Image 1 (cartoon, rainbow, N blue to C red):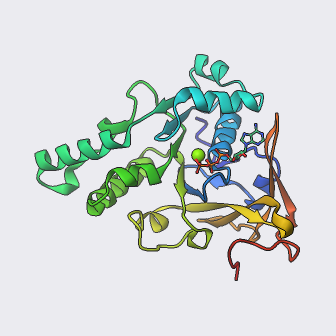
Image 2 (tube, rainbow, N blue to C red; image 1 turned 45 degrees about the horizontal axis):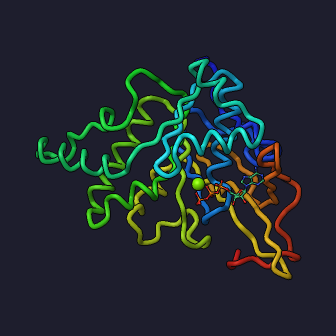
Length: 260
Ligand SMILES: Nc1ncnc2c1ncn2[C@@H]1O[C@H](COP(=O)(O)OP(=O)(O)OP(=O)(O)O)[C@@H](O)[C@H]1O
Ligand SMILES: [Mg+2]
């Protein structure tokens, strides 16, 4: 990667306007939202755009298999196979249970928790990405059920690894209820919100008469003067996500949650 480059742009129409200069390279950014709010498509789209700019992207899926992710991309007329052949894109499915087992094994071997090195657990050795996407942290957390402190240790190591390697990361987190966005509510991943440099929130909104629409927001981005507003977003056939930075969530929309 060009070492002079300091900011990452998502290339998602309208979205970058919320971010000013862009996302500082090396940031870890949470992509949070409820089920079906567009988290996976948002990340696949920025992966696609990054590859178009010659960046190397590792998409780590703990939910959908590689084939499904490719189909989603092809559904928007993107060409994941071309990028795979060029060595720019790696879509890979992982099993969360393998991670929790490895962490367990390494902890008992190392005896000292600080000795865990997450590198061998996850990262393909023959691919050094500029961008990592994890879909999702919630799936990983579920595999640590009953062992929350292990998950916390693992996450701390993972964030540290990302920081060390100057990799820009997008970490999907499913939130049960949108008011929890960006908050350190009591769930397994509570440590995550303050470890992350940025938070992007996706919302599924109920309009009057039962129509649903989508919205997006940048909740935080360290070092960047973000536009503080929740704006309209659409998932468009053959195109992907389009964000309307001037269409602020207004009074005509009755949301599923309180925005105040
Ligand atoms: N080709 C398409 N054209 C238009 N809309 C689509 C297309 N493909 C998917 N969608 C819509 O996008 C929505 C969001 O999908 P996505 O898989 O990104 O959500 P998600 O937040 O990752 O959900 P989950 O929590 O289940 O993983 C889907 O519910 C679907 O309605
Ligand atoms: Mg998803």
